[in-house]
Amino acid sequence: MPELPEVEITRLGLKSLINYKVSEVVIRNSSLRWPVDRSLHKILIGRKLISLKRRGKYILAEFPNGTLIIHLGMSGHLCIVSKDREIMKHDHVDIVFDNVSHKIVRYNDPRRFGCILWTEKNPLKHKLLDNLGPEPLSSDFDVDYFFQKLRKKTASIKNTIMNSHVVVGVGNIYASEALFHAKIRPQREAHKVSMTEANNLVLAIKETIKNAILKGGSSINNFFDVNGKNGYFQNEHQVYGRKDKPCILCKNPIQQIILGQRSSFYCKKCQQ
Ligand SMILES: [Zn+2]
Image (tube, protein in one colour):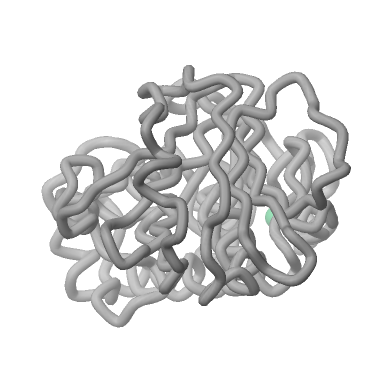
């Protein structure tokens, strides 16, 4: 599943299309999490892409008349392809930009949990985005805010940092990694995390996500950027996917447990 770093890398890769106009929209299969608006071509043709923003794992493509809200779901990809690129099985939507090389933004999604929604209103007030917690890299996500949130929660700390009402965009991989850096066991109840530990975890989440963006994301579930390049942060995973392999700090074997139906990885000795 693409996590925040992969979505951010996708957004950055699409920025070359800003200021270009849409010349065509092709909807081959409108069936995503919610159906893609069949009149999107009428809405977008001749409109210039003004900006590309991100909120949590949503990409916000702003046009003069509204915004496309795009989520990659479990398996969505956005790629920039040329006109002669062969159509693949799960290529749902093309947005063709009238730039010099006639580049196409192509949305492919085998599992169809993603979405492409149009809104003419403020996208940040859309029901999908309105109740989201702070961005992990913003100054709003600090220890004072975070510790207050933890004090009320009896859920595990791992499930708490993956809760998008607490902080957005910390998915399964980066939650395991950040907890290792902060030396906190994933299954510990959130309200039992001290202020010092909460501070370490805030810093670890920010560092892990920043580093993953820098390394092009984790290409473990077939993620690649808009130009088809792999990320290489998966080579730096310290615990995620390393069951029974030696901890890089103490050499004890990495443990795997299931929390909230997701695999979690940690070191029994280094994380308390
Ligand atoms: Zn260890």
